[in-house]
Length: 407
Image 1 (cartoon, rainbow, N blue to C red):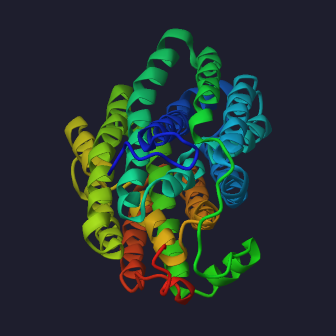
Image 2: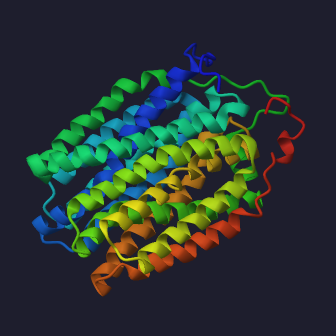
Image 3: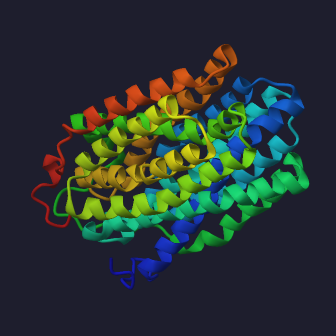
Protein backbone atom coordinates (compact mmCIF):
# COMPACT_ATOMS: atom_id res chain seq x y z
CA UNK A 1 0.00 0.00 0.00
CA UNK A 2 1.47 3.32 -1.06
CA UNK A 3 0.76 5.41 2.02
CA UNK A 4 2.31 8.56 0.52
CA UNK A 5 -0.24 8.78 -2.29
CA UNK A 6 -2.29 11.95 -1.99
CA UNK A 7 -6.08 11.72 -1.95
CA UNK A 8 -8.42 14.02 -3.83
CA UNK A 9 -8.43 16.35 -0.79
CA UNK A 10 -4.65 16.84 -0.93
CA UNK A 11 -4.08 14.72 2.18
CA UNK A 12 -1.73 11.75 2.06
CA UNK A 13 -3.34 8.35 2.22
CA UNK A 14 -1.59 7.56 5.51
CA UNK A 15 -3.30 10.55 7.16
CA UNK A 16 -6.75 9.47 6.00
CA UNK A 17 -6.13 5.87 7.11
CA UNK A 18 -4.67 6.92 10.47
CA UNK A 19 -7.57 9.26 11.23
CA UNK A 20 -10.15 6.69 10.15
CA UNK A 21 -8.46 3.97 12.21
CA UNK A 22 -8.34 6.25 15.27
CA UNK A 23 -12.02 7.15 14.92
CA UNK A 24 -12.89 3.46 14.63
CA UNK A 25 -10.66 2.69 17.62
CA UNK A 26 -12.60 5.03 19.91
CA UNK A 27 -16.04 4.35 18.47
CA UNK A 28 -15.69 0.56 18.38
CA UNK A 29 -13.78 0.44 21.65
CA UNK A 30 -16.55 2.24 23.55
CA UNK A 31 -19.12 -0.04 21.94
CA UNK A 32 -17.17 -3.13 23.02
CA UNK A 33 -16.92 -2.27 26.73
CA UNK A 34 -20.66 -2.32 27.38
CA UNK A 35 -20.46 -5.97 28.46
CA UNK A 36 -18.45 -4.85 31.50
CA UNK A 37 -21.50 -2.87 32.66
CA UNK A 38 -24.06 -5.68 32.47
CA UNK A 39 -23.59 -7.05 35.99
CA UNK A 40 -23.09 -3.76 37.93
CA UNK A 41 -25.88 -1.90 36.11
CA UNK A 42 -28.46 -4.69 36.44
CA UNK A 43 -27.60 -5.26 40.10
CA UNK A 44 -27.77 -1.54 40.94
CA UNK A 45 -31.04 -0.96 39.10
CA UNK A 46 -32.58 -4.30 40.10
CA UNK A 47 -33.08 -5.44 36.50
CA UNK A 48 -32.59 -8.78 34.75
CA UNK A 49 -29.90 -9.36 32.18
CA UNK A 50 -32.49 -9.36 29.41
CA UNK A 51 -33.28 -5.67 30.04
CA UNK A 52 -29.64 -4.61 29.73
CA UNK A 53 -29.13 -6.93 26.77
CA UNK A 54 -32.17 -5.44 25.05
CA UNK A 55 -30.72 -1.94 25.48
CA UNK A 56 -27.51 -3.08 23.77
CA UNK A 57 -29.59 -4.88 21.15
CA UNK A 58 -31.49 -1.65 20.44
CA UNK A 59 -28.17 0.17 20.06
CA UNK A 60 -27.04 -2.37 17.50
CA UNK A 61 -30.31 -2.26 15.59
CA UNK A 62 -30.30 1.55 15.48
CA UNK A 63 -26.68 1.35 14.34
CA UNK A 64 -27.69 -0.95 11.53
CA UNK A 65 -30.74 1.08 10.52
CA UNK A 66 -28.68 4.27 10.47
CA UNK A 67 -25.68 2.87 8.60
CA UNK A 68 -27.13 3.09 5.05
CA UNK A 69 -28.17 6.70 5.69
CA UNK A 70 -24.88 7.79 7.26
CA UNK A 71 -23.18 5.94 4.40
CA UNK A 72 -25.20 7.79 1.77
CA UNK A 73 -24.40 11.13 3.45
CA UNK A 74 -20.72 10.20 3.59
CA UNK A 75 -20.68 9.25 -0.09
CA UNK A 76 -22.41 12.48 -1.15
CA UNK A 77 -21.18 15.13 1.30
CA UNK A 78 -18.11 13.63 2.97
CA UNK A 79 -17.34 11.56 6.04
CA UNK A 80 -16.44 14.42 8.39
CA UNK A 81 -20.03 15.52 9.05
CA UNK A 82 -21.01 11.93 9.85
CA UNK A 83 -18.12 11.53 12.28
CA UNK A 84 -19.10 14.70 14.18
CA UNK A 85 -22.64 13.36 14.50
CA UNK A 86 -21.28 10.08 15.83
CA UNK A 87 -19.09 11.74 18.45
CA UNK A 88 -21.92 13.90 19.81
CA UNK A 89 -24.53 11.13 19.97
CA UNK A 90 -22.10 8.67 21.57
CA UNK A 91 -21.45 11.13 24.39
CA UNK A 92 -25.19 11.72 24.84
CA UNK A 93 -25.85 7.97 24.99
CA UNK A 94 -23.22 7.44 27.68
CA UNK A 95 -24.61 10.34 29.73
CA UNK A 96 -28.12 8.90 29.48
CA UNK A 97 -26.83 5.61 30.88
CA UNK A 98 -25.19 7.55 33.72
CA UNK A 99 -28.58 9.02 34.69
CA UNK A 100 -30.56 5.80 34.07
CA UNK A 101 -33.05 4.63 36.69
CA UNK A 102 -35.24 2.24 34.70
CA UNK A 103 -35.01 -0.10 31.73
CA UNK A 104 -36.67 2.57 29.56
CA UNK A 105 -33.77 4.92 30.37
CA UNK A 106 -31.36 2.21 29.24
CA UNK A 107 -33.29 1.74 26.01
CA UNK A 108 -33.09 5.49 25.29
CA UNK A 109 -29.36 5.37 25.97
CA UNK A 110 -29.10 2.50 23.52
CA UNK A 111 -30.79 4.53 20.79
CA UNK A 112 -28.26 7.36 21.04
CA UNK A 113 -25.31 5.00 21.32
CA UNK A 114 -26.56 3.26 18.19
CA UNK A 115 -26.55 6.58 16.33
CA UNK A 116 -23.11 7.23 17.76
CA UNK A 117 -21.39 4.14 16.46
CA UNK A 118 -23.20 4.52 13.12
CA UNK A 119 -21.35 7.81 12.75
CA UNK A 120 -18.06 6.85 14.36
CA UNK A 121 -17.61 3.13 13.75
CA UNK A 122 -15.81 1.18 11.05
CA UNK A 123 -18.80 1.34 8.72
CA UNK A 124 -18.81 5.15 8.85
CA UNK A 125 -15.20 5.60 7.69
CA UNK A 126 -14.73 2.61 5.41
CA UNK A 127 -15.94 4.56 2.36
CA UNK A 128 -13.49 7.41 2.92
CA UNK A 129 -10.63 4.93 3.01
CA UNK A 130 -12.03 2.90 0.12
CA UNK A 131 -12.21 6.02 -2.07
CA UNK A 132 -8.75 7.21 -1.04
CA UNK A 133 -7.00 3.90 -1.80
CA UNK A 134 -6.45 2.37 -5.21
CA UNK A 135 -8.44 -0.80 -6.03
CA UNK A 136 -5.30 -2.93 -5.52
CA UNK A 137 -4.67 -1.44 -2.08
CA UNK A 138 -8.29 -1.20 -0.94
CA UNK A 139 -8.46 -4.44 1.07
CA UNK A 140 -5.22 -3.65 2.91
CA UNK A 141 -6.25 -0.04 3.61
CA UNK A 142 -9.64 -1.09 4.97
CA UNK A 143 -7.91 -3.80 7.00
CA UNK A 144 -5.88 -1.03 8.65
CA UNK A 145 -9.12 0.53 9.84
CA UNK A 146 -10.22 -2.83 11.23
CA UNK A 147 -6.87 -3.11 13.00
CA UNK A 148 -7.46 0.33 14.48
CA UNK A 149 -10.78 -0.92 15.84
CA UNK A 150 -8.92 -3.86 17.33
CA UNK A 151 -6.49 -1.52 19.08
CA UNK A 152 -9.48 0.39 20.40
CA UNK A 153 -10.95 -2.77 21.88
CA UNK A 154 -7.57 -3.71 23.34
CA UNK A 155 -7.17 -0.35 25.08
CA UNK A 156 -10.80 0.40 25.95
CA UNK A 157 -11.37 -2.76 27.98
CA UNK A 158 -8.66 -2.30 30.64
CA UNK A 159 -9.27 1.46 30.54
CA UNK A 160 -12.97 1.04 31.31
CA UNK A 161 -12.40 -1.79 33.81
CA UNK A 162 -9.97 0.41 35.74
CA UNK A 163 -12.41 3.32 35.68
CA UNK A 164 -15.21 1.11 36.99
CA UNK A 165 -12.99 -0.27 39.75
CA UNK A 166 -11.67 3.15 40.81
CA UNK A 167 -14.65 5.44 40.22
CA UNK A 168 -17.70 3.17 40.13
CA UNK A 169 -19.70 2.35 37.03
CA UNK A 170 -21.66 5.61 36.96
CA UNK A 171 -18.75 8.05 37.23
CA UNK A 172 -16.77 5.96 34.75
CA UNK A 173 -19.43 6.73 32.15
CA UNK A 174 -18.71 10.46 32.49
CA UNK A 175 -15.08 9.81 31.65
CA UNK A 176 -16.08 7.67 28.67
CA UNK A 177 -18.36 10.45 27.42
CA UNK A 178 -15.43 12.85 27.53
CA UNK A 179 -13.30 10.27 25.71
CA UNK A 180 -15.88 10.06 22.92
CA UNK A 181 -15.58 13.80 22.34
CA UNK A 182 -11.96 13.28 21.20
CA UNK A 183 -13.43 11.94 17.95
CA UNK A 184 -14.34 15.54 17.06
CA UNK A 185 -10.64 16.34 16.67
CA UNK A 186 -10.21 13.51 14.15
CA UNK A 187 -12.98 14.46 11.75
CA UNK A 188 -10.99 16.87 9.57
CA UNK A 189 -8.69 14.39 7.75
CA UNK A 190 -11.70 12.38 6.52
CA UNK A 191 -13.84 15.44 5.73
CA UNK A 192 -14.57 17.06 2.39
CA UNK A 193 -17.10 16.39 -0.33
CA UNK A 194 -16.02 13.43 -2.49
CA UNK A 195 -15.16 14.38 -6.06
CA UNK A 196 -17.00 12.72 -8.89
CA UNK A 197 -15.06 9.75 -10.21
CA UNK A 198 -14.16 9.68 -13.91
CA UNK A 199 -16.47 7.09 -15.42
CA UNK A 200 -16.60 5.40 -18.80
CA UNK A 201 -20.17 4.37 -18.06
CA UNK A 202 -23.15 6.58 -17.31
CA UNK A 203 -23.16 8.16 -13.83
CA UNK A 204 -25.30 6.16 -11.43
CA UNK A 205 -27.95 7.64 -9.16
CA UNK A 206 -28.67 6.42 -5.64
CA UNK A 207 -31.90 4.78 -6.80
CA UNK A 208 -30.09 3.01 -9.64
CA UNK A 209 -27.38 1.81 -7.27
CA UNK A 210 -29.97 0.31 -4.92
CA UNK A 211 -31.87 -1.34 -7.76
CA UNK A 212 -28.68 -2.88 -9.13
CA UNK A 213 -27.60 -4.19 -5.72
CA UNK A 214 -30.97 -5.72 -4.89
CA UNK A 215 -30.99 -7.65 -8.18
CA UNK A 216 -27.62 -9.31 -7.51
CA UNK A 217 -27.88 -12.74 -5.81
CA UNK A 218 -24.30 -12.53 -4.49
CA UNK A 219 -25.20 -9.32 -2.66
CA UNK A 220 -27.93 -11.18 -0.74
CA UNK A 221 -25.58 -14.07 0.06
CA UNK A 222 -23.09 -11.56 1.45
CA UNK A 223 -25.89 -10.06 3.57
CA UNK A 224 -26.82 -13.49 4.94
CA UNK A 225 -23.26 -14.26 5.99
CA UNK A 226 -22.76 -10.88 7.63
CA UNK A 227 -25.95 -11.39 9.66
CA UNK A 228 -24.17 -14.30 11.35
CA UNK A 229 -21.07 -12.21 11.95
CA UNK A 230 -23.12 -9.70 13.92
CA UNK A 231 -24.85 -12.42 15.91
CA UNK A 232 -21.52 -13.92 16.92
CA UNK A 233 -19.46 -10.89 17.87
CA UNK A 234 -22.06 -8.92 19.84
CA UNK A 235 -23.30 -11.96 21.75
CA UNK A 236 -19.73 -12.84 22.70
CA UNK A 237 -18.55 -9.30 23.39
CA UNK A 238 -21.54 -8.47 25.62
CA UNK A 239 -22.13 -11.74 27.45
CA UNK A 240 -18.60 -13.13 27.96
CA UNK A 241 -17.95 -11.19 31.22
CA UNK A 242 -21.24 -12.48 32.67
CA UNK A 243 -20.57 -16.02 31.40
CA UNK A 244 -17.16 -15.97 33.08
CA UNK A 245 -18.69 -14.79 36.35
CA UNK A 246 -21.24 -17.63 36.16
CA UNK A 247 -18.36 -20.11 35.99
CA UNK A 248 -17.01 -18.78 39.28
CA UNK A 249 -13.98 -17.13 37.65
CA UNK A 250 -12.58 -13.71 38.49
CA UNK A 251 -14.04 -10.74 36.56
CA UNK A 252 -10.52 -10.04 35.29
CA UNK A 253 -10.73 -13.24 33.23
CA UNK A 254 -13.57 -11.77 31.18
CA UNK A 255 -11.63 -8.55 30.70
CA UNK A 256 -8.53 -10.45 29.64
CA UNK A 257 -10.59 -12.62 27.32
CA UNK A 258 -11.98 -9.60 25.48
CA UNK A 259 -8.55 -7.94 25.43
CA UNK A 260 -7.11 -11.05 23.80
CA UNK A 261 -9.92 -10.84 21.25
CA UNK A 262 -8.71 -7.33 20.44
CA UNK A 263 -5.10 -8.48 20.20
CA UNK A 264 -5.98 -11.43 17.98
CA UNK A 265 -8.08 -9.12 15.86
CA UNK A 266 -5.03 -7.03 14.99
CA UNK A 267 -3.34 -10.08 13.51
CA UNK A 268 -6.46 -11.57 11.95
CA UNK A 269 -7.60 -8.36 10.28
CA UNK A 270 -4.14 -7.75 8.83
CA UNK A 271 -4.02 -11.29 7.48
CA UNK A 272 -7.52 -10.93 6.04
CA UNK A 273 -6.47 -7.75 4.25
CA UNK A 274 -3.48 -9.55 2.73
CA UNK A 275 -5.64 -12.55 1.85
CA UNK A 276 -8.05 -10.24 0.03
CA UNK A 277 -5.21 -8.91 -2.13
CA UNK A 278 -4.10 -12.33 -3.35
CA UNK A 279 -6.86 -14.90 -2.85
CA UNK A 280 -10.63 -15.32 -3.13
CA UNK A 281 -12.47 -13.13 -0.63
CA UNK A 282 -15.51 -15.43 -0.53
CA UNK A 283 -13.39 -18.45 0.39
CA UNK A 284 -11.71 -16.40 3.10
CA UNK A 285 -15.09 -15.53 4.59
CA UNK A 286 -16.22 -19.18 4.52
CA UNK A 287 -13.08 -20.24 6.39
CA UNK A 288 -13.57 -17.51 9.00
CA UNK A 289 -17.14 -18.57 9.78
CA UNK A 290 -16.18 -22.26 9.86
CA UNK A 291 -13.39 -21.47 12.31
CA UNK A 292 -15.78 -19.61 14.59
CA UNK A 293 -18.01 -22.70 14.83
CA UNK A 294 -15.08 -24.71 16.18
CA UNK A 295 -14.33 -22.00 18.75
CA UNK A 296 -17.89 -22.06 20.05
CA UNK A 297 -17.79 -25.86 20.28
CA UNK A 298 -14.85 -25.35 22.63
CA UNK A 299 -17.06 -23.50 25.10
CA UNK A 300 -19.40 -26.51 25.14
CA UNK A 301 -16.91 -29.35 25.43
CA UNK A 302 -13.76 -27.96 27.08
CA UNK A 303 -13.45 -27.28 30.82
CA UNK A 304 -13.98 -23.57 31.42
CA UNK A 305 -10.81 -22.28 33.06
CA UNK A 306 -8.96 -18.98 32.74
CA UNK A 307 -6.64 -20.65 30.23
CA UNK A 308 -9.40 -21.98 27.98
CA UNK A 309 -11.32 -18.68 28.05
CA UNK A 310 -8.22 -16.74 27.04
CA UNK A 311 -7.08 -19.32 24.47
CA UNK A 312 -10.49 -19.56 22.79
CA UNK A 313 -10.79 -15.78 22.84
CA UNK A 314 -7.42 -15.51 21.11
CA UNK A 315 -8.51 -17.82 18.31
CA UNK A 316 -11.83 -16.00 17.99
CA UNK A 317 -9.95 -12.71 17.84
CA UNK A 318 -8.17 -13.89 14.70
CA UNK A 319 -11.64 -14.35 13.18
CA UNK A 320 -13.26 -11.24 14.69
CA UNK A 321 -13.25 -8.14 12.44
CA UNK A 322 -11.34 -10.01 9.75
CA UNK A 323 -14.70 -10.27 7.98
CA UNK A 324 -14.80 -6.49 7.41
CA UNK A 325 -12.03 -5.99 4.80
CA UNK A 326 -13.24 -9.03 2.85
CA UNK A 327 -16.95 -8.13 3.04
CA UNK A 328 -16.53 -4.42 2.27
CA UNK A 329 -14.06 -5.15 -0.52
CA UNK A 330 -16.55 -7.52 -2.11
CA UNK A 331 -19.08 -4.68 -2.15
CA UNK A 332 -16.51 -2.57 -4.03
CA UNK A 333 -15.76 -5.49 -6.36
CA UNK A 334 -19.45 -5.86 -7.17
CA UNK A 335 -20.42 -2.21 -7.61
CA UNK A 336 -17.33 0.03 -7.60
CA UNK A 337 -16.44 2.70 -5.04
CA UNK A 338 -18.96 5.46 -5.82
CA UNK A 339 -21.78 4.26 -3.52
CA UNK A 340 -19.58 1.93 -1.50
CA UNK A 341 -20.33 3.33 1.97
CA UNK A 342 -24.08 3.28 1.43
CA UNK A 343 -24.16 -0.21 -0.07
CA UNK A 344 -21.84 -1.53 2.62
CA UNK A 345 -24.22 0.13 5.09
CA UNK A 346 -27.03 -2.08 3.78
CA UNK A 347 -24.90 -5.19 4.25
CA UNK A 348 -23.99 -3.85 7.67
CA UNK A 349 -27.67 -3.49 8.54
CA UNK A 350 -27.95 -7.25 8.10
CA UNK A 351 -24.97 -7.57 10.47
CA UNK A 352 -26.77 -5.44 13.04
CA UNK A 353 -30.02 -7.41 12.82
CA UNK A 354 -27.86 -10.39 13.74
CA UNK A 355 -26.28 -8.32 16.52
CA UNK A 356 -29.70 -7.43 17.90
CA UNK A 357 -30.77 -11.08 17.99
CA UNK A 358 -27.44 -12.31 19.36
CA UNK A 359 -27.24 -9.95 22.33
CA UNK A 360 -30.97 -9.94 23.19
CA UNK A 361 -31.43 -13.69 22.74
CA UNK A 362 -28.40 -14.29 24.94
CA UNK A 363 -30.03 -12.38 27.79
CA UNK A 364 -33.48 -13.86 27.21
CA UNK A 365 -32.21 -17.45 27.11
CA UNK A 366 -30.05 -16.93 30.18
CA UNK A 367 -32.89 -15.44 32.25
CA UNK A 368 -35.07 -18.45 31.38
CA UNK A 369 -32.51 -21.30 31.49
CA UNK A 370 -29.79 -19.83 33.71
CA UNK A 371 -27.28 -21.09 31.14
CA UNK A 372 -25.65 -19.99 27.88
CA UNK A 373 -25.32 -23.51 26.43
CA UNK A 374 -28.19 -23.04 23.96
CA UNK A 375 -26.54 -19.85 22.67
CA UNK A 376 -23.25 -21.64 22.07
CA UNK A 377 -25.08 -24.29 20.02
CA UNK A 378 -26.98 -21.66 18.02
CA UNK A 379 -23.69 -19.90 17.30
CA UNK A 380 -22.12 -23.15 16.07
CA UNK A 381 -24.97 -23.84 13.64
CA UNK A 382 -25.07 -20.27 12.33
CA UNK A 383 -21.32 -20.37 11.69
CA UNK A 384 -21.76 -23.43 9.48
CA UNK A 385 -24.63 -21.75 7.63
CA UNK A 386 -22.55 -18.61 7.01
CA UNK A 387 -19.65 -20.68 5.70
CA UNK A 388 -22.04 -22.36 3.26
CA UNK A 389 -23.73 -19.19 1.93
CA UNK A 390 -20.47 -17.34 1.25
CA UNK A 391 -19.00 -20.16 -0.81
CA UNK A 392 -21.16 -19.68 -3.99
CA UNK A 393 -20.73 -15.89 -4.17
CA UNK A 394 -19.67 -14.75 -7.67
CA UNK A 395 -16.65 -12.55 -7.05
CA UNK A 396 -16.82 -10.24 -10.06
CA UNK A 397 -18.14 -6.77 -10.99
CA UNK A 398 -21.72 -6.30 -12.13
CA UNK A 399 -22.20 -6.22 -15.91
CA UNK A 400 -22.29 -2.40 -15.90
CA UNK A 401 -18.64 -2.25 -14.79
CA UNK A 402 -17.02 -5.18 -16.56
CA UNK A 403 -16.01 -3.05 -19.54
CA UNK A 404 -14.81 -0.15 -17.37
CA UNK A 405 -11.08 -0.43 -16.61
CA UNK A 406 -11.28 2.50 -14.16
CA UNK A 407 -13.26 0.37 -11.71
